[in-house]
Image (cartoon, rainbow, N blue to C red; front, side):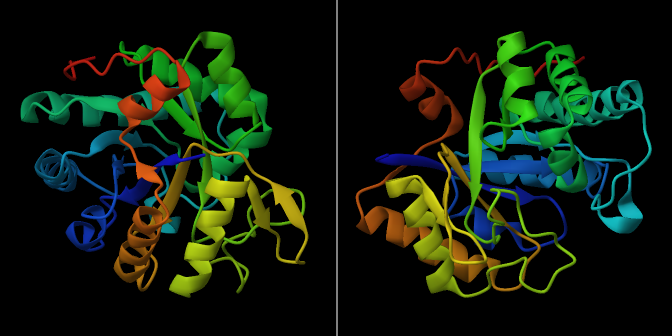
Length: 264
């Protein structure tokens, strides 16, 4: 692939400006694991200034554990929480005149919905309830992708430049020491392998097929801005275009209507 969407989970208390200058899309925490009205507004303004795609980053309602544990919620409760979080960002985006283009679940909700179809369906229904056609971002070949496909939602398969993978294609859990890639050169090498070859090396050295249209960097990891700069410069040097969400969906021939954000 000669292009990629470069996204960052943000609005979580890091120096977003230092990271987002190298990105093309921002996933904005909207109150579940982090973020409030002030951080959402500030991050949306950064997106406007930097001409980035802005999207919602909903999670389990678990600020104490940063959304990184699975809560015993029913699918209906998950749908309600995700709908409320997307709605909070949509309302502020409307007031700021910033269109939203996508939704990406966070942390434990992302990983749980990747393999549990009832949770994936709940998230997809919440995206539909926003009243616009947002793209859904998640792992390739996951329950989230099937839920989006069934409902006609555009879907962007995601890879990670700063997370290690298991041989089955899942991410090494965050509570393990090897979960994060902190070395910028290693992060760049993994990203280029995903974009150019559709492959990633698992923690045991095996090659795992990974076809992705978007790559993520985490803002909450030490050295994130340095890795972001190194990655963007490497993509540019290798002739790989860094696209916004709407541009990527056009390349894929998917329907996307990034309207002015409206109240829900």
